[in-house]
Length: 195
Image (cartoon, rainbow, N blue to C red; front, side, top):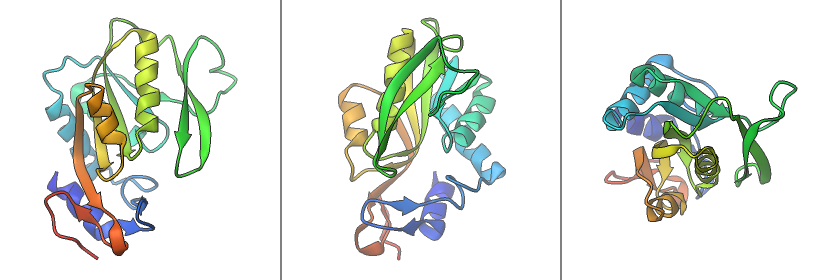
């Protein structure tokens, strides 16, 4: 997706050799028109899969997931990182470690919203080590649902997440893949390095 690649190159800020800040368009501020094109890109890649539900993790996955759900005309479920008074029982749960935040969280989805009849597409904002994606895969498995694939907005191809998921036989579609963040430069797969 060329427009996404351009946003990464022009708006992304490299914070280290493993962290890029993309909060101008994905993790804090959201451009709805651009995000709609992200959702349409996922919908076109999974149009023939018969998706009945989209699952994501709060909060940065919600915008691309909702737009994909709009395009596919299916409900979107977001796994919560914290339990609330209204979501405290009858749950599927999985533990997810965040390397960015250096903490583990239990993520939860109500059993009312996903079941063995569902064909699920997981949407992840950034795929690095794959912990968030694996947690959502675990929830899909607990529900007895069928995982049709994982749509990733930005994959860090130099980290293990994508490889781990693909080795498990999971169909992963990334809209943009970063090959390297070395020396403060973003290098996309099949692209030149940009300062």
